[in-house]
Image 1 (tube, rainbow, N blue to C red):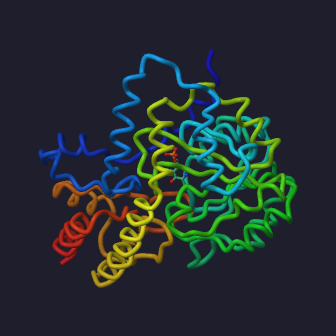
Image 2 (spheres, rainbow, N blue to C red):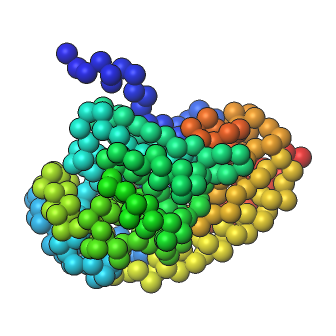
Image 3 (cartoon, helix red, strand yellow):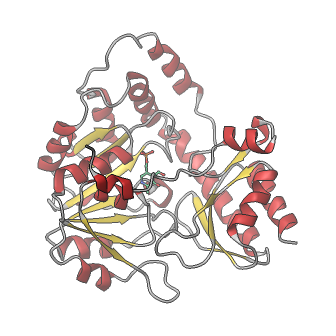
Length: 360
Ligand SMILES: Cc1ncc(COP(=O)(O)O)c(C=O)c1O
């Protein structure tokens, strides 16, 4: 018999996907504007596409489970020794491995809200006891003191910087005050780090209770290939490496990630364009009555809806072939909100004109 507690667990809601909206609303697939999952909207450079095609010839062969080339490149990219790096099939899988490493049933896990829902989901899978810390008043995140006081006797604390879905990044000093002020292991999810540039990765060798989780799905545009890594003390990195599936990253994904690091300048230029567009989108959204965008240091914007219920807005956007994420009802967020990924200039223009039309 399976664990009955699983019956109470809700599946992760990844939002709508282009194929589904295309079919349901009769919008041609190529007309869909997908601003749902915080992906990089720009195409991969030719060199990466060539490397993927070349590596596909070896698809009959297992990847080398040491992933030595990717680790070497990541060491160079992060400035940390390979012994402090652990790999997995996306940041999501590292978050799961961290719960496996640290959590016994009923261990206390602190999750400041609102944030990425997978932390609670994965902690629940370990039968942990979750202490959610909610923001007060008009704040979008709890204060440092509130997080620290919840941290007493905790085993694990999940921080997300920049935070999904708010886009706000924490001040480095604040994160380090939490790390220094607790016995718990502090997981800092830096999936969107490159868009803000601030990291605590340089502290993982000094603080055994600090783990940074990163992704190739956002800045590096490889969401479809599934590569993530953690930066941690040698001991924790070694344990994360020990418990992963030996072949967790396909050889095609490894090759693409290696090439992506070599092409970092291409991605930096894409990032600059995304940030420029984010600011333009923010300004345009601010001008539309009934919308309140929040400042963001990531590649998406959280928008509070003042004049229209989220369900109605989503339906009207879907009919026009535009997908954003409805994050209303997310614990810690009061009122209706949507999260909008920053797209290409053309995609953002289509979104803005649809919103102007709907909210006129
Ligand atoms: C904050 C955060 N962490 C982790 C992930 C998962 O990343 P990956 O695609 O590397 O599993 C996401 C994806 O949306 C995210 O928003």
